[in-house]
Length: 280
Length: 284
Image 1 (cartoon, each protein chain N blue to C red):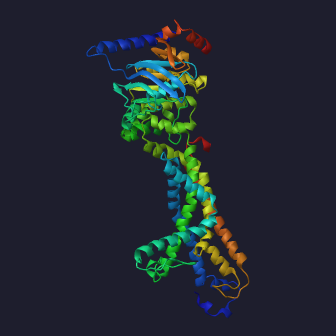
Image 2 (cartoon, each protein chain N blue to C red):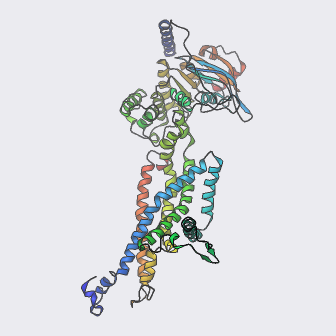
Image 3 (tube, chains in turn brown, blue):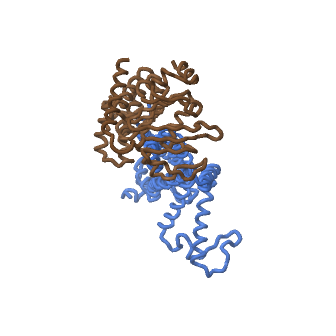
């Protein structure tokens, strides 16, 4: 509890510092801005008008029961899924669409790639490339997509593996690692892109309780560093500890949102109350 | 070859063999081993090319290209190989000569098809009647390569198509999520991961290909099976040497030859498979 308090304090002072040093000019451009997002598969509408704004340093947790659309929303952000309606604005630049109808698609392939490199994703099933070693997984996209020098990428990659605590696994294949180690490697891979925001899609759901703790520790450290993150999770404890803003999605709409304290302690909606009591 | 062979009556026991197995006709049989190995090496690149073309065509987003891929693999796979081996070389040969006839002998008014005969002018012959024997054999060999490539390319296309589909979708989606283009995703992730699913099927095809090489005789290429039959027999077109029916020994040698070839191939495939499955959990 004390630790949680400390971390909260730590982050608050970090935000304060930022506010103090950043007093010039207009308000900062959000890293991710979603306006009125709609997404459906055929006749089934899974997201029904969601707004979301993530400023630099925000850690936003998306919670909700299975099928509430939280993973789909996350996948709409980096355009793995196409939202049929609504605006997606990344660092002030809106996604340009082929046309404004229900079967629209992103128009500019270069823009899609640029956005994706800038919003690196961590998957529930890790999805490390199985034919590459752990280090190669981390250096692959920086070298082939961002055009970084291989030696630099490897040095940076090793430093990141050190950071997530699996430096000794650099030359092993993903299948030789435990789930928790694989997910930490996947986080290192995402960090290697030096993204302006990270997207976590249920990063701890495929893990057993012991290895889960390793991954939560890493995510908590990243949050403390002031990284911008969108975190879809079933882990309420992690959401409470890590996030500064929590969004509860229910049947494709935001049912309730606010600070962790507001959402978890001063819960207003009965649906959220039911959801929280069912997850405890 | 050896001096003592000049006088057959002086030969006794196994020395006789040293003369017999070194005759020019036998040299032709040994040479035909090279023909078989040469064919095997020559057909692999076009087979892989047609295989990839067929597999990628079947995955194409453009419907007519997809139909072409499906049509090619289904038709070739559905027709007996031997029919193809009888049909294709003749069809190909006649098609080439017909086109050459139309271009080079436009002044000849007689039809090409005269009843049962296919008649083209001398200039349209492929290769030319006056050409060296070597060119005749090379032309026959090329027809064989093309026919083998078309038949085995279809099976390869099917194997590769299945292997490309077997790569987990998450692996490819992750590549896209990290900003890789479709091309990079294909070359950096899809292709390297596909082999482990393709190799069992490809090794099967390779074995079948080795065993199908005797079909060369259908195409008029004299391969080792042809020579084994001719030289092992008592009295044949090419040899009237008086010896008993030795075909069992000649075919026994063929057995050893083909078994050796397939054994070496299997060992090579095992190595390639181990290399391709590094890190993939299917290997463990």
